[in-house]
Length: 173
Length: 142
Image 1 (cartoon, one colour):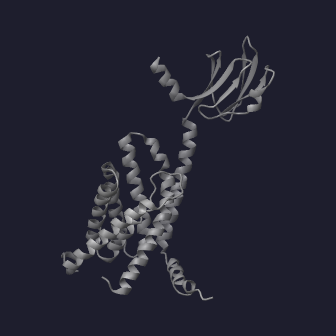
Image 2 (cartoon, chains in turn blue, green; image 1 turned 90 degrees about the horizontal axis):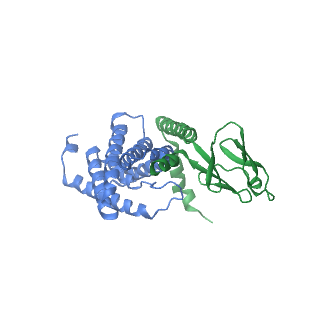
Image 3 (cartoon, chains in turn purple, brown; image 1 turned 180 degrees about the vertical axis):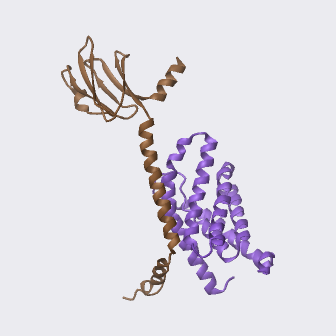
């Protein structure tokens, strides 16, 4: 639609809202303790905001939300070096989710997009980390992380699906 | 007692879970399958590539280096203090016979991890497991 390509005040407001939701979620995520022996595994609930922004508005807005979330959450809550891992992983998973949602027709639902997004996020992150510290034994935890990220991905997918339904039901967008 | 959650919202949520699409199921199934396969192949690969050695020392001097291998092999260590018979099997090593009076080394059973030791004090014998890389590092530092 023609309306989609313009930046209207309404759209700007929605992008800002989703970005703030993503930031708050990525802050809350730090307090969720996962009783798992693998270091660095997160639930990824901030992805709820990115994914539901993608399915309710469009890809470009979701990209803005994801990059704002990635940059600001690193600068606000953790060390700057984490940007090296998280920003490329965010961009890769963004494109994977966008491809699944917009280019594969009606085959996948949000759950499939979320699962593939979180798996690609993991893989990018671990491959970059292994390249930085030059220790490829790090890749051995990749399959375990991927299997766990399938479950978190299903959870995130359903969460953003319910959020989308709630948004449509209340006519917010 | 009326439980409004089960009557109302929980049922809606459960109904929502049913409508996962076929391709979602497929992709989840394949991702899990692929990663289980990857995990298994990694796990078996690690065991093959990591060569561990047992170093047998008497009075601190290495008398024998034993590669921990799959196949059964018996080593006789005879010194002026006594005799020990070592058995290597399934990448573990154990003492099966000893001339010492207390037989603590025989009772200890098999060891297989890097850093584990069997010590036979009467025979002045120490069996320590090291990895191959450590041997190389030792060679460089010497």
